[in-house]
Image (tube, rainbow over all chains, first blue to last red; front, top):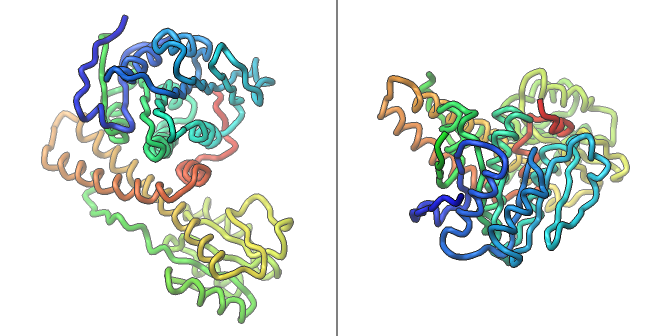
Length: 190
Length: 196
């Protein structure tokens, strides 16, 4: 299913967008893909960050949505069972998947994402998800991390979409995170 | 709910120069005084007395045994004071891991000022981001509460707008490493992602 987005100028011009919807799985990639292509253009470079999801599924979702054109980098946090692969990168078709060991710091995750931004190409960052990052770090460090990441996205002339599962958070938490973003897109029914 | 007025400037951005040698302390102070308020300490006791929340950067000479830098650093935890440290060392090999920056002696005025500017910016970002989180939390609590207070919400929104603009200006001057390190300043770099 693809949601139809009628993006107002506030969203279209935004560097960092909070995407609030219910559910997990491929929801974040699907919504980010829809938003990234809502104006009819396809980004040249996609950076997909997944905290607990499957990078292979993420790559598949992006390829289904955008076709073979854009370069695709997927950064994922590795579980204990795959920690030995932390320093290596593997390829799924024309996409690159990099694993960050779960023992690494959140600061390193931020630096790795920032290093993938390319001001020379139209770049989209899909962050999946705030909900899972908060589960790992707690609320305040997550908030601080998102501000720093948002600054890198803005400085790199990229567009960041940050997914949050709104069935997990209360209204106060949703409002708190919304203060970090240029625009908020809410979609879907519970 | 606090109604205290918060200025967007942070503390006083004081640089505390902890150097035992009189000539070197005078030279370092002269190099920095044009851009930041400077306090000086010639021994541990004076350093302890001078270190408070107004201090953003501590420049300490580690080439003599005058200063117990571990004791100074412990103040970050015991007193909750946020500051960054630049150490003067004989050579880079003397550098440990606890301090934020190391400068090999002799250090040029330009290098010294550039280092203090960078560390000061990290501290300002860390402090202001903490303040932004506090105001955002207050805004979220007010907005989601039963008794909506439009004037208060408008005041908090204006406050957030001002703080965010200032935050963006500060963080834009930091590189990737400094931006994430400073943002997560109170979050231990060794903490990991293990899902709880």
